[in-house]
Length: 105
Image (cartoon, rainbow, N blue to C red; front, side):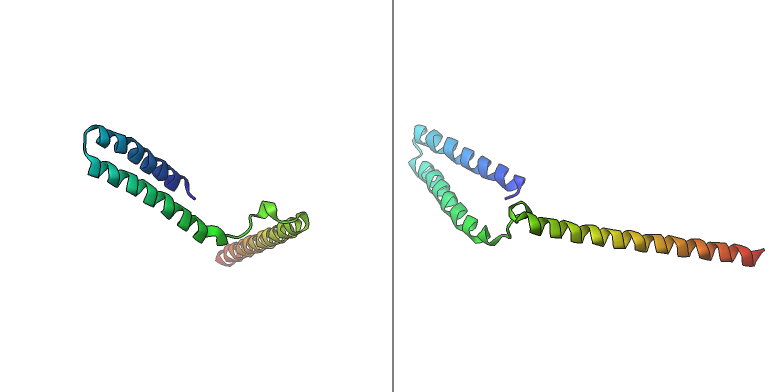
């Protein structure tokens, strides 16, 4: 759950927990009941939505160490290959610039 959703959830609970007793003190029983009902509904909705997101993949930290090392090795190999490609492209560009300079002389 993102930080924004957590902040909104805390604000939702706080507003309804503070508003319900306030409306009871003011004699507005219907509005107080609505705040309590919305709070209970939000609680139930949270538990249903939380179960929907339970199919998230396992974090890398929970993988066994060998799988983590294999993943790290694969990432390093990929980075090394891309760095080599960048170097080749730079050498090729330098060669073209040098050849153009020789032709224009």
